[in-house]
Length: 346
Image (cartoon, rainbow, N blue to C red; front, side, top):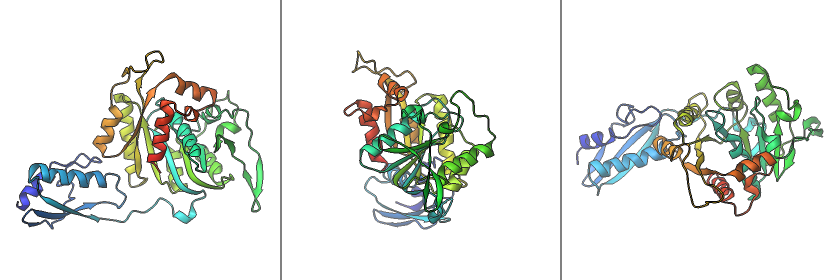
C-alpha cells in the first residue's frame, strides 16, 4: 500500500451534506501512515456532533478494504475544526427534560403529527414521563388526536408564578394553541405573533420534570423553527416523510436545515410513513402506492438511521380521528412499529 492509493479510495466517499468527496471537501489530514497492512489517517469534521460522522468513518474504512486491500487494518482518527456549541446553554432551558426532540416534516400531509402523538404515547406506555407540544400553530391537530377538544387550560401558582396547566391524556402532558382558539377559526398571524405564542406555551406552563419532551413542528421552515432552537436545547430531530419523490425532496431540505450551522441539531433519523397499503381483508398483501423504500434510500444516502416504516392502514387513521392513537392497541402491527421507534431514540 502507498498513500496515493488511500487518497484515491477516499475520493470515492462523498459527504452527504454537500455531495463532494472527502478529498474535495478537505477532510483528509496530511498524516497518512502505512506500516505493512496497517494504515492510519485522520478525517477532519466541522463539528463534534456532525450527523454523518459515524457513517463516513464506516464508509472510509469500507473504501480502503474495497479499493486498496481487503486485509488492511484501518485506524481512522477524527479531528474537528470547531467544537459543537448548543443553540442555548443547557442550564437556560425553560423545560426540565432529559431529552427534547423535534418531530419535523418538509411538507404537510405526510403524517408528522400522527408520528409525534403515537411516539409520545408509546414512550409513556414504556414508563417515561412525556410532554408533547403542538407547535403547528396554523394547523393544530393534537387536541383531536388525543380526544381533548373540550379541554380548556387552567392556571396554577407554582413557586409564585401563574403557569398554564397542560392537559394530560394516556400518560402524556400536552399543550396546543388549539386549546385557546375557536376551532372553526383560521389562525392568521405573522411570524412574530406565532413565535411568541410558542414561547409562552413553553415558558409559562407547568411541565414539571420530564424524560421526553416532544415538539410537533409546523411543516417546512419558518420563524417558529428558529424560535424553538433559540429557546430550547434540542437533543435531536426526527424527520417524517412518505416514500414519494415530492416528499423526499422536502425531507432532504429538513435534514439540511437541522445540520445548518445556525440550527446545529443532530438528526436522530427518518421515519417513512405510508410505506405501503395493506387492506384488512388481505393482511399479507402490500401495495406500494407512494413508491417503495424512498425514505429508506434517503436515510442510507444521507448516512442517518431509518427509524421505521409505517404502513398505510385504516386503523392508524381511525385512531387519530377518534382520539385513541393506534400505539395504545397492544399487539397491533403499527403499534409495534411505534414502540420500536420509541426504543430506538432512547
